[in-house]
Amino acid sequence: MGLLECCEHLFGTSNLYQVLGVEKEASEAEIRRGYYKVSLQVHPDRVPDNEQATEKFQVLGKVYAVLSDKEQRAVYDEQGIVDEESDTLRQDRSWDEYWRLLFPKITVDDIKAFETKYKGSEEEAADVRKSYMDHKGNMDRIMVSVLCCTYEDEPRIREIIEKAIAAGELPAFDAFTNESEKKKAARKRQARQKSREQKMDSFLTDLEAKYCKKGGKGRAEKK
Image (cartoon, rainbow, N blue to C red; front, side, top):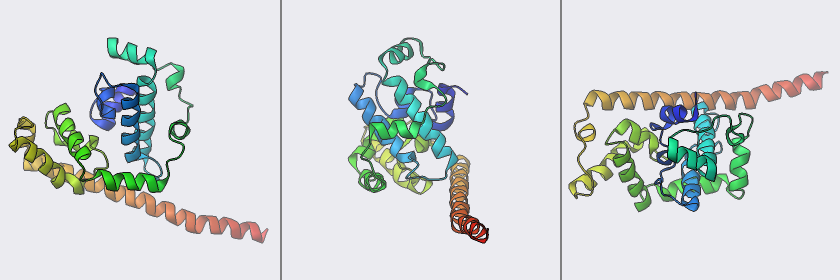
């Protein structure tokens, strides 16, 4: 699967700028900040042992690598394609190391602090409004694209959008205003299932760390 297809699958859009939450005319600094913000949401330190989060993190690294390279960005802007064979997107690249080179001083506490500060802020509200416009009111895609967002946040995200519509700041897209209860319920079930799977993965990892290592140590001592 190519980069654009991966973006569509994981973030609900094949538009690289939308993946990072920036405009096409964004400066290098704005693209870097967009990458920083979105990647914090799925950083391995924040969401450990989660296959989809890891995949998203890797794809975000590739998106930033393309948009931060002048030649690659120019090709994408003009033709809407990326060079999958370029050194920029080579398969053996460590995207975690790449991230650490860009943001070497970021700690787990910094990531948690960002999430706490971001939720409920005007910055979040602005991002929600932009996502609403980018995805024409499609809540499935909005919930995927909004930073630090879980299914428990949906009522709050909907309220932000509804207030903006009432204030005339956003148009009333049919996909949002007339979304069926069946679709809402399906999204909630899917989110809960993912949450259960993540908790189970974490639980199994904890068990492995607690018992398997001890068992290995015991066997070594016996020898």
